[in-house]
Length: 410
Ligand SMILES: Cc1cc2nc3c(=O)[nH]c(=O)nc-3n(C[C@H](O)[C@H](O)[C@H](O)COP(=O)(O)OP(=O)(O)OC[C@H]3O[C@@H](n4cnc5c(N)ncnc54)[C@H](O)[C@@H]3O)c2cc1C
Image (tube, rainbow, N blue to C red):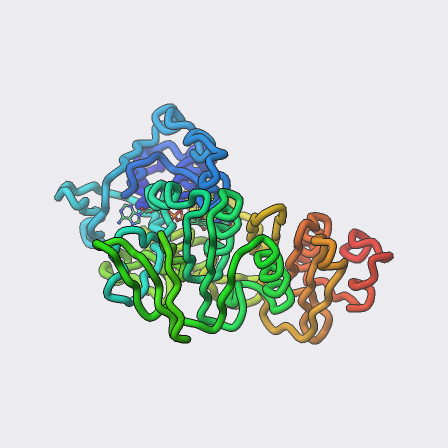
């Protein structure tokens, strides 16, 4: 059977799933494509949820990956508000929670992540929210008012982005981080320090090295947070931003290998030739570093959507990309390229005091492993190129602002 008749079913209508559906058509897939999403909305972008959307600067249309008409116009059957409950690999069907079964020839799992919850008894109180979906953001938005007191548990990207948005709306913000510094898992020490100082200057109170032990409530609404250091902090709302975990149960229940994400190869294939997995839910090879890793980012979702769509359409595989991320807080645009494996030396280029600088991380032989750039797009672009080319550099030349970064990358 040619691909004129074969049916691709995509589970998860987020950034990865929505992109894969569009790419299949772009690459010439002729057969039916069904995109099944548990949320009630057509595929949308999550990054603005902690930034422009919270601040009321975006309309719903600005969030959407593509206009709602794109899907019928491109013969993509989009089924929103529809949960897949099981995969039956023997018969090639997915079972919806309604009981309906949908047959597939090829299945793409793009189930994303869910926000981790705190293992505390009263985490279900009113006023305690997480942030993963548009519905979560719409619950959080009215809680961020002038002088409202919000506690953010977790100083990762989402926690700090919401802290910046909340300050711009006039809320009083306390950030609580269990580790000794902000952005502990995702940024180098010097970058953490820079962001901590910026948030302090923005009026955020930051408490590090303290865990949340309990919530107080008043008539089932959160009223205070108790910390391991004995302090109790009164509040009107709490955002739990302690990371995300992959939605892999569907895959593991179907017998697919999972290990902090659904295991896939460089073409996003699982061990079942009929099943691909893409986006935040995967644990994938990152060929540049000869490692496997689970990445949570829009560029990763797009890269793997391209891999799966190209493989299905019989196209040449797309060139491997350097992993990259971004975060917007206040007037700062942070861009990170690469992953900081095997770092032996860290070089700062530019002056952090000017809020325009970059931190290069080098392996022992001078190979550029990753770069963290704050309001420094040229350094980010050059760093990304250096990483892709496995370029070796001399640290003193990277630190020397009189050396052109483009020439160093060339
Ligand atoms: C607040 C916030 C801010 C972010 N900011 C940035 C940023 O600045 N830069 C960046 O690069 N990344 C950012 N990210 C991360 C980025 O949004 C994700 O990496 C990206 O959305 C991953 O896309 P995905 O399609 O893999 O997963 P998701 O976007 O999570 O989509 C998965 C979809 O699958 C659905 N689903 C799951 N299971 C089922 C099922 N059984 N049946 C049907 N549907 C199912 C889910 O409901 C969900 O809609 C941010 C994320 C959040 C939450």
